[in-house]
Amino acid sequence: SQVPPSFNEVRHTMNLAQVMAIAPTIKMICFDGDMTLYDNGKNFAYPALADLLCMLLQRGVKVVLVTAAGYGFDGPRYETRVRGLLDSFKGNGLTDLEMARFYVLGGECNYLLQTGPGAKLAQVPDAEWSSPALPGPKPRLWPEQSCARLLDLAEASLRASAQELKLRAQVIRKARGVGIVPGGSEAVKLAPTGHGSVKLKAEALDEVVFRVQHALKSADPPVDLPFCAFNGGLDAWVDVGNKAMGVEALQGFFGLGPTESLHVGDQFLRTGNDVAARAVSPCIWIGSPKETLKVLEILFGLLDLADAQSADDTPATFSGGATAGALATSSAAAGAAG
Image 1 (tube, one colour):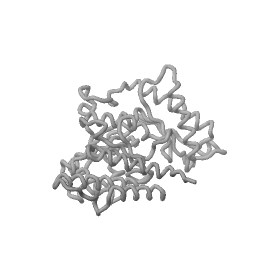
Image 2 (image 1 turned 120 degrees about the vertical axis):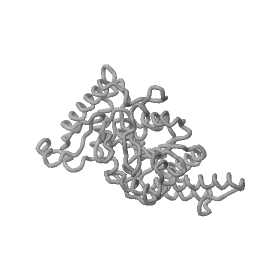
Image 3 (image 1 turned 90 degrees about the vertical axis):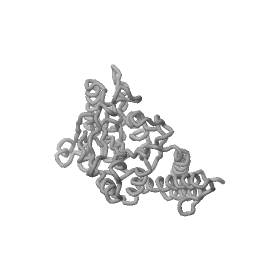
Image 4 (image 1 turned 135 degrees about the vertical axis):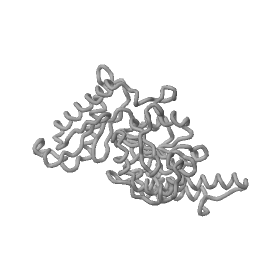
């Protein structure tokens, strides 16, 4: 009898195939934040991953953190999350031009910042990346009235879910997003027999997301803007726009097509916020920053192979002498372990 492949084996095999397909044309890589570049709710702390990202920037590849974190254009707050990466830019001697290829797109698609001198993040003017002359969506030009209505509907659904599910949670409203988070000790009074003052259960967060998705999709009159309702692992959020809008806006800004860009993330289920990116870009589904590191190691093996072949027009092996078959075996092994 045959044993069917596991989900992780299939996932890793498809990831390998996608990396091998995109390597010859890649000019931009977008990364999710939590569980992709850094651990959930934590800050960047992977030196080996930072080194590979620096090498991408030195090769001329645009690297973008596309995150649900919506801190507006507050550069220092984003810098805190990626401090280890920004410090590596200086430690690896990147020039200002090379550092300038690193961007952060916050709130899914709403706030674009670029790295400047001293590895500081600063706002990219809306007139530059949301210019009507550029192709693609223009999130910064969406009517504020439409944004407010979407968030009003979402907030009402979140509050109703919290009450009906007896969640000890609080609702947080931002300019382009609204979310539900653990409520702390004060929330115990709101739901004496409930849960969530310290941690909200994954099942409860999924239910909250499904309810708000239904509320927005069935609204009358219909919601006239794209949105993303997702389970963040520790919380649940609804953002104006989604990562499809973000990645497509970046493609328009940089003058790139889908065959030149790649999105890497961990949230590709119905309650995730990376799945929308599949509509506009090839994607890699990973489960941890360590898997992101492995994907980049394979990518660089392919890029090194291409460099060697173009240099002397003779067959070359991957970095370290590995072949494509060996990389496939390694990736499958990682999937079985994961």
